[in-house]
Image (cartoon, rainbow, N blue to C red; front, side):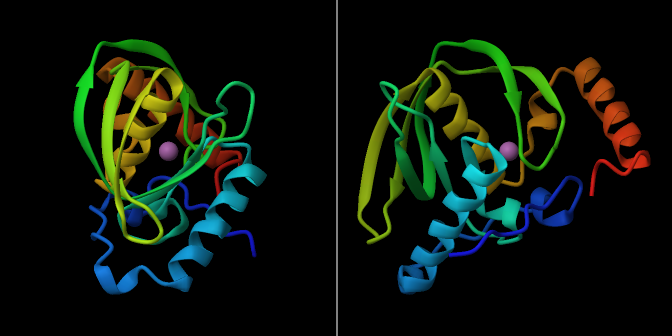
Length: 172
Ligand code: NI
């Protein structure tokens, strides 16, 4: 296992639509990449990490939003949002935007369909932080970053802050 390099905004891979993982790609290499992504995510203190954030323009992500206080490692390959419900407003961060967090409005509940490491399809009904995370990471697979989910005022503020962080060398 090894730590992967986390790509920071505005690298083009973060803004590109990821390619689907096709049937032949469900192999030990994919399993290794996903294990490395878990390790990288935990090392960076995140709860979710999508393939484009480690420079892979594909549709998959890992997340670990603790459930009843216990770790809950999940991998979603070719995720698809089936339905959403409600609303939540809360603070959100992104490992590709180090040092930046913002209040973002998201749906409260999500039903997501995806494939597991064996290629089997599953559906999951999630709410609260887990729903927020699935929406955020599925966005990454679509080349959408959380800046795009901010109000225009907050986006301007965030972009200004990014410029300052870049100038001070805190954004590599
Ligand atoms: Ni992110």
